[in-house]
Amino acid sequence: MIPEAMDVKGSRSTSWVVIGLGAAVSAAGLVIPGKLGSGAVGFGAAHMLLGALDMLRPTGRR
Image 1 (cartoon, rainbow, N blue to C red):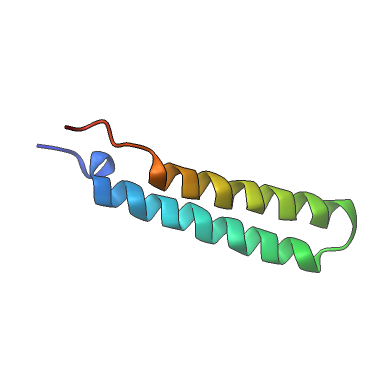
Image 2 (tube, rainbow, N blue to C red; image 1 turned 135 degrees about the vertical axis):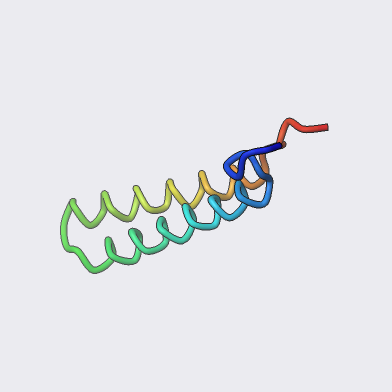
């Protein structure tokens, strides 16, 4: 039996959650002035990129 955390569908939905949270942080960073806002935009953009790359990663199952 495969745990839910190891399920391929669960992995994909986790990636979408990471992308969505990254977008939310980036949007909030656009509203925040100064270096803190710039850092939030970069942090959110990095999470969006990593979430997208995680969807492209092979699962390891054959």
